[in-house]
Amino acid sequence: MELPATLSRTPARSQARGGEAAHTDARKDAHTDTGPPPPPRRAPAFYSSVFAQIEEIGWVRVVSATGDDGLSSLTFRVVDEQGRIHLLEITLPIGYPASPPSIAAEIPYLPKIQWSKTSRLKDVIYQFQEHLKILQEFWSTMDEIDKVLWVVDPTKSTYAMTHRRLALGDDCYILLHVDPRKPRSLPECRFLGADGKLDRLIVNWRKNRKRWDVKRKFHENLAGVLDFALPVPHSVSSVKDDEQADCGICYAKHLPVDDELGAHSGCATDYTCENPSCSRAFHSICLRDWLRSITTTRQSFDVLFGNCPYCSDPVAVKVADR
Image 1 (tube, helix red, strand yellow):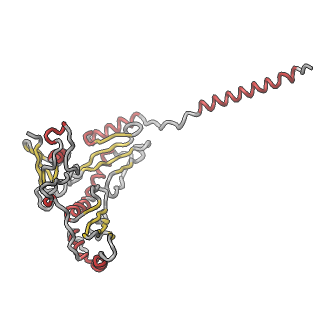
Image 2 (cartoon, helix red, strand yellow):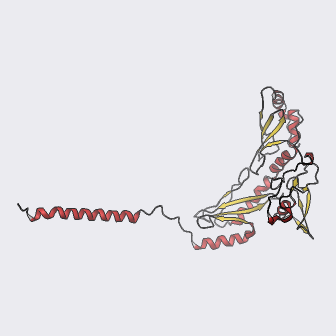
Image 3 (cartoon, helix red, strand yellow):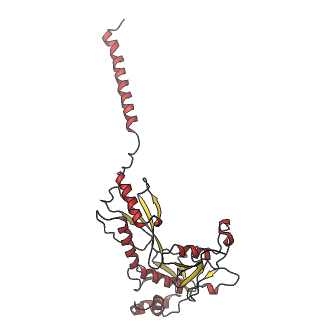
C-alpha cells in the first residue's frame, strides 16, 4: 500500500537537515581548531627603541639576543672592577617599557632594579654594575679561600657559589657556607668525616667561634677558631716535572689539537703567575684572549699588560707569536 506523500517525505527532509547541521558543525570546528593563539605582537616602535638603547650600551657588549621576536631576551657582558666577566640576561616583557624588565645572572643574589617609564636598558646595566661593587669583598674572600686552603669542592667554582668543602686530612672535611652580604663574618659550617676523628675540631669550633674577628683574614680566623693547621692546596710549584698543571682559564692541561691554534695546538700550560702565593698556570693564548676582554688591559708595542685573574698581580703576554 502506498504511503501518504507527507509521511514519505518527512524522514528525507529530517535526514537532510540533520546532515546539513552536522556538516555545518564540522566546518565550524575545523575553522576554530587552529591551536593556541599566536603570541601578541609588539609595536614597531619597540624595536627601534630597543635598538637605540643597545647603541647607548654598545653592541660589542651584546652576547646574545633571543626570544620569539629576537629581542625578548638580551644578554650583555659586564666586567666588574677586578676584571671578572659576568653575563647579565635582561628579559623584556610584552608591556615594556611600562612594565619593568627582569634580570638573571650567575651571582649569589640579584639586586632589586629600580624602574620607571623613562628608564632605559643602560640604567639596568648601571644598577647591576653598582651591585657588583658590593660583591667584590665576597669574591675576594672566596678567592682567598681557593688560593690558601685545600678546596676539594667545587672543582670549578662559579661566581654564584657560596660554599667550599675543605680537606682537613685523614678523610675529614669541613663544609663552609659564606654569607655574600657579610663575607668576613663567621661562616656556617658542617664537619664531614668518620666519628671520633673530628671530635676535637668540633669542640674547638663551639668553644672558640666567638673569637672570630672580621678584621682578620678568613683563613687565619678559621685556623685560629679550630686551633688547627689547615692543609694548603697543591700549588703549581709542587707539581712534578713530568706533570702539567691545569690552565686557570680553560681548566685543561693541554689545548685541543687544532690547526687554527697554529704552534699552540696541543700545547701544555706555558705561563705561570710570578706571585709565589698564587703561581697559577695558564696557556699564554688563553691568558692573552682573557686580557683582551678586560677594559683595564693596556698594550705597549706587542705586549698586553694586565692583572692575574686569580691574585690580581701584574701579568704580561705578547699580542701575537713571532
